[in-house]
Structures are given as C-alpha cells and as structure tokens.
Amino acid sequence: MLEKKTHYLLVNFGGPRSAQEIYPFLASLLTDQDVVRSGLPSFIHRLVFKCVAKIRARRISKEYALMGNKSPIYEDTEALAEALRLHLKAPLLTFHRYLPATHVQFIEEIKRLECDEIRVFPLFPQFTYATTGSVARWFSNFLPDTLTTKMRWIKSYAAHPAFIQAHQNQIRKFLAENNLAEAETILLFSAHGIPEKFVEKGELYPDECLASFQAIMQAFPQSLGRLSYQSKFGRGEWIKPYTIDVCKQILEWNQGRQHVVFIPISFTSDHIETLVEIENEYMTEVREANLKAYRVPCLTLDPQWIEAILAILTETNCALNQMLIRRK
Image 1 (cartoon, rainbow, N blue to C red):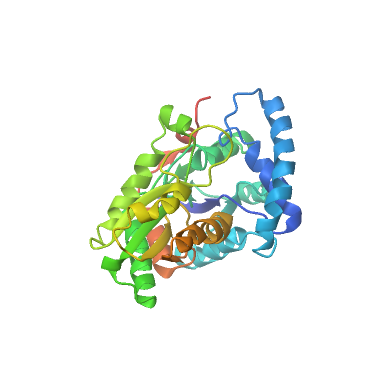
Image 2 (cartoon, rainbow, N blue to C red; image 1 turned 90 degrees about the horizontal axis):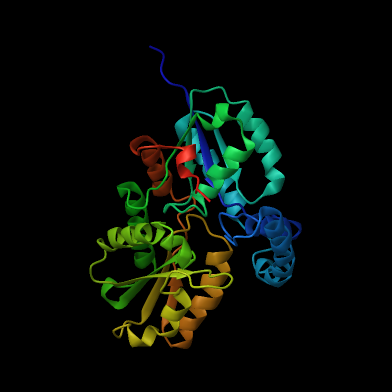
C-alpha cells in the first residue's frame, strides 16, 4: 500500500508590507463578514466598510510609521515557513488572509500541488470563525473542491502540551533574563478580543483562551496571573475584561507586586497589536501607576515553537474545511 503523500499549508492574518498596503489590508479585513458581522447585504457591507477602511487607514498610518510603515507579520510568517520546510522535507505553502496582493500567486501555487492531503496549520491557537473560520470560507469560495476536500485542518491547539510548554519556556527565559522573581511578578495575558455577540452565537473562543491561560500558569504558581482582551473595534460589547481597564485598575489588585509582564496569548507573531497597542498604550498605563512593565515577545521563530508546530501537526486530530465555516 502506497504511503499517503502529505503537503502543508501555514495560514496567518497577513499585514501590510508597506504604507501603500495599509488601505488594501484594512479594506480586506473590514469587508470580511466573518470578522465584521454587520448583518447588512454583502454589497452594502462592502461599500460601507471600504469607506470605513479609508478613514481608519489615515488614522492608523501613524502607528504603522512606528514600525517602519509595515507589519513584520508577513516576513516572520515566511521565515517560519522556511524553518518548517527544513524539518518537514515536504512542500509547505503560506497564505496571508488579508494581503490581497499575494492571493493570485497563492492560488497558482496550491493548484500545482500533487498530493493526497494538505495539512493546514493556522497561526491562531484558539479557534474562532473570525480567524481560522474566515480562512476556511475563503478557501471554499476561491479554490476548487478538488483542493478543499484534501485539506485537513488543525482547528485549535489552545491547550496542546507542546504549545503550552513553548509559552512556559519563553516566559521562564524572559523572567531569568530580566532578573524577575516569580513571587514579585504579575503575568498579564492579553488575547485579541471578539464581540460578545459572537459568544452568544456559540463561539468557544473565550473558553479556549482561558484553557491556554490556566495551563500556562500551572508552571508559575507564585506569580499572580490575569487574562484580559484587547483590540476592541466598533460599537457593542466585546468579551471582558478589557486589557485597558485591567491596566487602569491595576493598583486595586496587584497585591503589592511591582513588575507586570505582558504575554500576548493569542498572537504567535508580533504585529501592531503587540508592538504598538501593548507597548505604547497598556505598558504606558502601567508605568503611570509607578509599576514596571515588560512584554514577552511572541513565539515567532523560537526553536521550541517550531518544534511545537511539528508536534501539533502530527499529533492533533484534524477537521475538514467545511466543518470550520460559520453558517450565516
């Protein structure tokens, strides 16, 4: 019996590679009805949120300027893919969901794959239809069934031991490098938020974030841990507590601890939410309370993270592409 021929696909959010890509990135993101669930007819939604993207692009360009007018997420994802190829010794493609300029080449490349199975690894540890589900819908819309039926997804790895251990190792190393004692430290885990109405419709994303947080904290029993959510956009309630509120109220619950270490729990590579939002907004808020603030880098290219991905790819039950698409 012939061995099954497996190829691989690494999927991520994408991010602008230049100032010129800020608007296309935002337009692609905000017109995605798995992300912004306005309830409007599709053509009206696109019209409205392309206008919103233009306004937001002008506002957010200053934040991207702090990072050299680009996000590092594209380059980091490509570097991670290259590292994984060395270990897998098999073709591995990348897909950047909100970088439209990369999509034509991606479609051409994936159509050339000759394999029995495509193992898909999303760089989103906790499942939500707004990230992993959105990519699955895009594949369903723009790729032939002959390809999507070959896809086997790692739907979630929020509590996978390899993912947890990679985070624990990263935190231990950071505490040691900064001479921070566990008992004197707050570990503040910040995850990307989602609207509360998503959870009311059955999304388990907050449960998965909590599972990641609790599993990682088992290695740090002397530290004070907190989980919060950031990056709220638009109207309506999002899942709480908000990271900004946790920071503003920190003197009410810090128990005399002077060191606050931010850990991006739902982000596997650094981008505007970690390099600007956490560093410039949340860490500043903590420092204004006369406490010391630090940020653990995302896992990005950490060797143990690469090993974790390889382990998760081979040890996790897979889901079919159609299973990950939200029913509207």
